[in-house]
Structure formats: C-alpha cells, structure tokens
Length: 317
Image 1: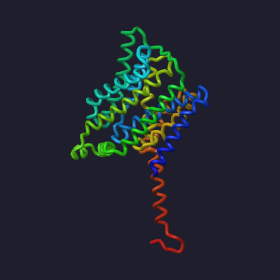
Image 2: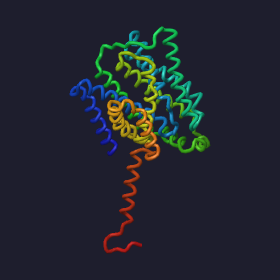
Image 3: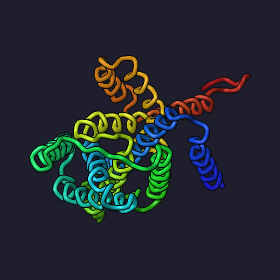
Image 4: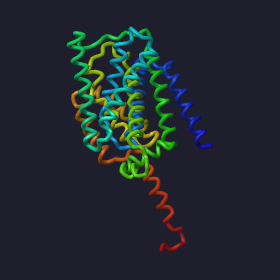
C-alpha cells in the first residue's frame, strides 16, 4: 500500500514538472534543464557507484561523447536515431573501459577514470584540429528548449525507476555484497565481474544520453565545454551529499547544490572553483554517508532515547 501511494505521489510530481514549461519563461526552462540534467547524472552515477563504492570520475567522458555524437550526426540522422547511436557508442566504450578497469579498486580506479576523461577530451581535440580543421561544431536545431527539458525529464524518470527496481532485486543485493566485501561475494558464487560490468554499462549509457540530449543547449560545441571536469566533480558531490546508496539521495543532493552553484557562479565567478573544492572536502568529512542517512541516524537516536527515558514516578535503573 505504501509503495503504491509513493509511486502515485512521484508520478504526480513528474506530471507537475512536465507542465512547468507552460508557466515559466526562457530562464526558468533553462534552469529546469540544468537541474534535471544533474539529477539524472547523479542518479545514474549512484546506480553503479553507490552500492559498489567504486568512485568514478569518468562522468564527463561519457557526457562529452553523447554531446559530440549529437553535434556530428544531427544533420545526418533523425533525432531519435542520433540518441540511439549515442547510447550505443556509450555502451561500447563502457564495455571496453569496464573490461579493462573494473578489476581495479580504490584510488587506482579513481585515477584511471579521471585519466580516461582527459584522454577522451584530448583525442576529440586532436581529431577536430587535425582531421576536420576546426576546434568545435555549430549545432542548430528546429525545436525549443522545452523539448530538451521533456526528454531529460523522461530520462530522469526512467533512471529513478530503474534504480528503484534494481535496489529491490537480486541484482541490487549482489551489488551491496560487492560493496561490502568483493572477496566474500566471489566466494559466495556471485559473478562479480559481470555484475559490475552490467551496471557500469547501464550507468554510462544513461550519462551518455544526458549529454546527447543536452547538446542543443549550446549552439557551439567544443571540447572545453562538454568535457569540462567540473561536470564529474559536481555529479560526485551531489550524489555523496544526498547519499549515493539511497534511492532519493542523488535528488536530495542535486537540487540544493545545483541552485547553490548557479548562485555562486553568477556572484563569485573567480572563486567558484575554490568554494567547490572546500564544499567537497566538507561533505566528505562531515557527511560521509549523506544527508538522508545522517537524518535517519538522528531519528533513530531520538527514538531510542525516548524508549530509555523513564515515565514520571518511575525510577531509572
């Protein structure tokens, strides 16, 4: 009963969000595009990294691949096929990267994924300069920002729904076992390599589609825009703040942080990166498990305190 009510409430929220562009101006729709994009990125990142605790900084690599795929193929293929091709390319790259790196752990995996993002950016830059003779591409579309927003909102709903199903499936249990102790999970007979590869590929495809859908936001696309490392760090911070292991954790982290970062970038453009780094360190030290788990811990402590408090007229033992 509670699950049915929750699904109905979430559906009502998404319906209201879908109708929002009819009541907002251009700036409001643009703000919703950025917000929905980061909610989807953080949810997709947490889909794999949350339960397995593999911290990936390759988000911007797949995001940029999706954006450049749209820029290259938009005038050649219909929009639906462009998104399909972008997702396929993201899937192939994820398989190649996953097969070669998912056996790494800890800081080695973090370093590799960060290097992967830089490698992809440099390869695209080299190709544009030496093969096409330019550094960027112009992208003109025949639809407004509302269409971009609705596509992102649909992808966000699919991502959250997929997270909900995985967390309540045997696959979700397998991922939690891998995150707790991968050696024990292997001894229990779990195909850890295949499980990690499957979820990494799904997460990467969603991130690639976010980049492909958001590409029309920029009339001119170049590597410094779509391969900006800040995208990876923002996604990571948002997921960690809310709680990467919880269904609504990425949403709880992404919404306030996106609005805060928008305000900071507008009012403190020269100090934005410094504030971002300080905020990241504060989250890691103060809220290592996220806001949701911190609040749940407070509620549990309050309840246990109430149970231990004697009634009036009684003597505490």
